[in-house]
Image 1 (cartoon, one colour):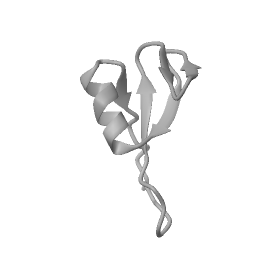
Image 2 (cartoon, helix red, strand yellow):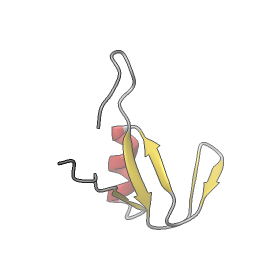
Image 3 (cartoon, helix red, strand yellow):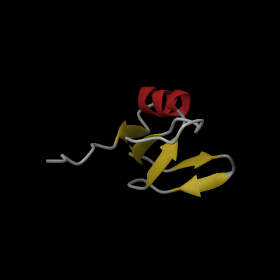
Image 4 (cartoon, helix red, strand yellow):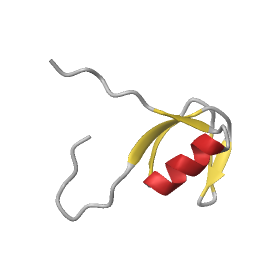
Length: 57
């Protein structure tokens, strides 16, 4: 995952259950980019999994 200099790091996750983040409802199966701390919390709660990156060859 490439990031611009001075950008906030984000982690793409796939939601495994319906959730609400920042007062926005998301359905299971949606892919969202969240902070590393939020990604960790979602994974621990069983609400998301890390989106696999496509192989670049």
